[in-house]
Length: 168
Image 1 (cartoon, rainbow, N blue to C red):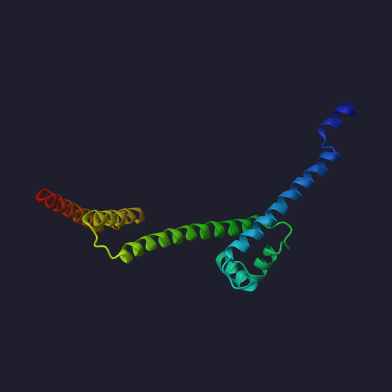
Image 2: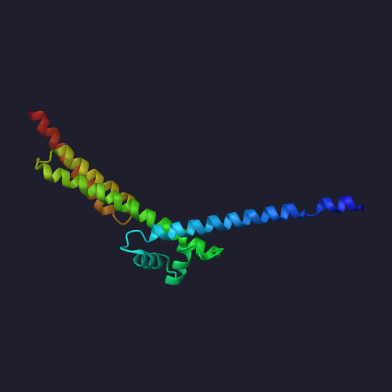
């Protein structure tokens, strides 16, 4: 083998330095992601100490580990820690979405009650359908009997309103 062909197969010194930069950028991105994840998990605390305690409880990591992640003191967080924080962030976002949906539902219910208007059969049928849909989404096997009763009540209500419309 010639000397030239041997050099072509080796990684040059310049390429090796470039690879280190990529690794360092990846570590910097991980540090930033972990820091922002911890801050997101602790949002709602009264001060930074409370935020760290909340984040530690949600991630099940120690308070000192959470502090080190928050202030980017760990140069290259381990894969297990990264996954724990990512999973906690995913769970918190899902919980926040559920909480917002429930909040909108409660507000819509309170607006209907605040209006003081007597509910018509169409509104009652709509509400029964909404409850039926929610129960079916949660667990149709467990709530099957309740779903059946809701459907029956909606059908009876529909027949009664049809009879009422025929009289007019």
